[in-house]
Length: 177
Image (tube, one colour):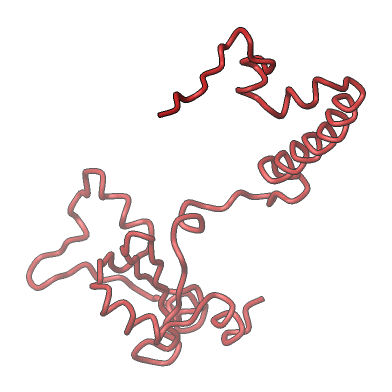
């Protein structure tokens, strides 16, 4: 049986640094070739940095004059034109978590000068709710203008979504530009 040959580290012509990093050891043999390699790599890193900066830092000229609202940033708008009756357009704002906020679209008859809302009646049965003071954190909801907040089942949402219009389709339908 032959014994395997083991080289002594002290007698090994290749240093440990060269073993660990063969690329640097091959370039260290020629200083002129290492300088040219560094020069070739440097423009790439500068170009990479500029590209990264361009992607991460927006150009001020591209920013909107008015930042988007929380609704515009967090919800996808859909519209139901002529819901139940002609001119009774509604919007549906859908959040990524499935929550839907439903309200009257700006083209709804309620917002028109002629035939719009002429009175609001808070009488419900025998009680007049107009005198009730609204308190708590949900009181703001009355001023927001939405009708309902719902969380439809995913299958129900897919059915309803097929009947709704996107913003561009709705604007084209109502000639809102």
